[in-house]
Image (cartoon, rainbow, N blue to C red; front, side, top):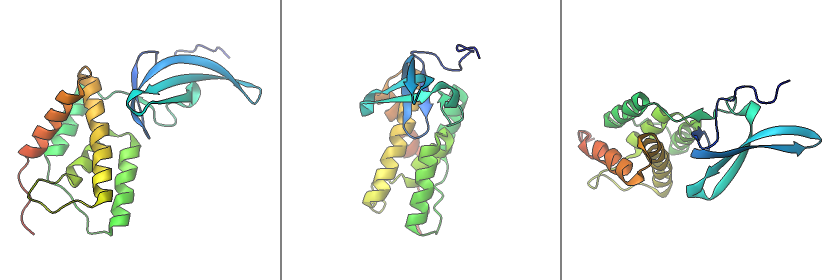
Length: 173
């Protein structure tokens, strides 16, 4: 079997790994594991000071993908503008769903979490766990928007915040 069959991802390319968000492929290396030679993507997540090694033949299977297209970014921004959908389920159940959306690597699903958990100053306080999930989703969204537009996280953060602040206020319950 030919080793260097056309790989979907290349060194220096930014990719999205579902459970960790945006990372950069530093290199492709071979490593022997239990007597078997494996080809691995070495992915650096600089913000988290973490390096991940992913077998090249498993990358797409586990959901690793290229950065979103500008169209998907626009769709995510449109999603943020929408009205927050808050289910009446118990918090533990909702938190689980939010967590799954964040770790899905799907930018639109992540934008939904940001939209649904975003609070304006005059709304009730977020609980600690709500804030944690909100910040995790916001960070993933910000990093990908920044990576697609050239890497400026401050600008991406401002753009996302402007969209969230411009939303129509929710109707009083």
